[in-house]
Length: 125
Image 1: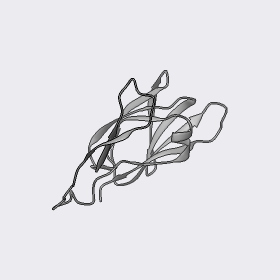
Image 2: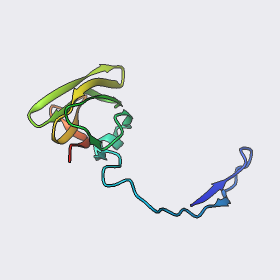
Image 3: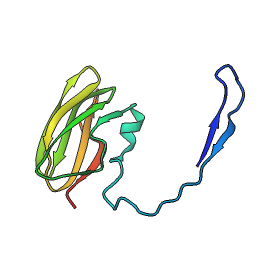
């Protein structure tokens, strides 16, 4: 790993400051990582406050909180169940009962009739 830095008063380029050797002897398994993101999330300046883990445990209740400018509705879909998130300004949040399988967050943007995929999680194995 290489770290670059520059002085705050300097308008120049960053210079190499530190080098680290990282040796890994054991991984954390396959249940790590962030949720998958889709283009509309990035294109609309989306920000994920919670839940940040890709794999969610079934039969638990998880809190979702996202900032999505230009969205008028957000909904979490698990199978045939829909969990709308409450809007306050550009921030949407709510608690969702997690089930097995694919978990997708959809947004309906101002001026649009259909919903766009924003994020995707996995419930269970």
